[in-house]
Length: 415
Image (tube, rainbow, N blue to C red; front, side, top):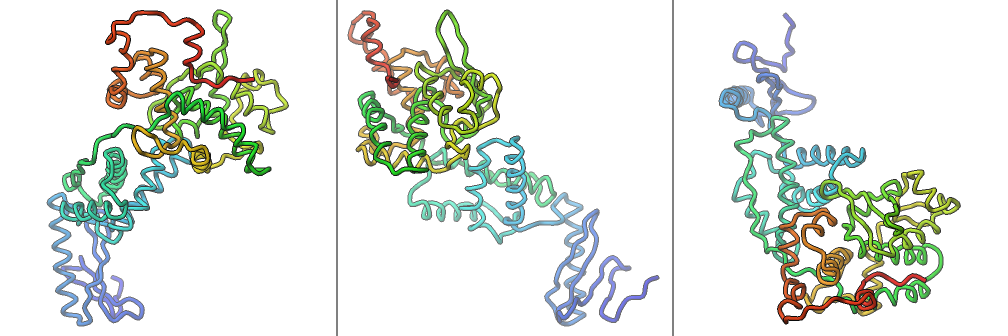
């Protein structure tokens, strides 16, 4: 039998060990519950008092194990960091959902600052309500339903990590609700404003400084045109788009471009409107690594290179700010219908609006093209129904001539 030092004592037939560590004057205790070693500080300087605390803690942990309660618990920040590390590993391996970036951001910005030192098992309804009030104050307004969905999903990732590691049981996971404001009318561009934007972009490029600033403006022009003519999701699908995901094919003498898109939702294919091939060619002609190759040969080689990149192949994270600066300079930042600032996502909404109203596309085809559900299209674009059915409502029945139809199209005239 191993001899114990003068600063180590055992209780309950050796099941509990009480000891002094280093220069500490307060007694520590350790014991094993199932497969877990538990180490605690008794907080006591007196040995007999420390033994009493150690004995009580041991019996309490035994009770937890017997009644399927977590034996070992952790503070929220510890578990959140584990969840974040797991999501980041998946993102780095190109295996995780891109929405994980939003989860990580929400955890770092809101949840960890508020719940950080709280034990994961101690977060109850009252603490969550206190967090909701604090978050609203930090944001400056009541968060939208979509924001709450993202935040709730981020919190659920933390609880899933805690359950998997035995820090909490599933029955103790609180139910997170979403009482945020529903989605409102989203800012888009009218056909007139869209044409104004396309007309002003070339001049705005020439006004910019040389070097990277000018390169950013050139890229923004084609980026805007491609997003507005495909319905691609900015921030997710655009970031994942590589040249290997772009296919040009011919059918009945006409040339088409197809994109394989993946990001927020499951992967899907999307067809670009007329003109998109020309915008892609312009990006290709500015990209140093591939500009020496014939455009069509380059596509056949399936290059694993980002489509939306600067000439040196680097990907910028500042297109959002560049787009806002352009809209502000052009007097197009504020949407007159919603009163909200237009953003890159407005290009996706503009695509949907033009497809439904100008092109007469049915919602089933649009849902497939945009990689979303029919219900989502109906919820966000039901206000367009009167315009879509204007001929029926007014009793007019006529077919547009090719010239009239062409005048309604939203694509840029490429010289």
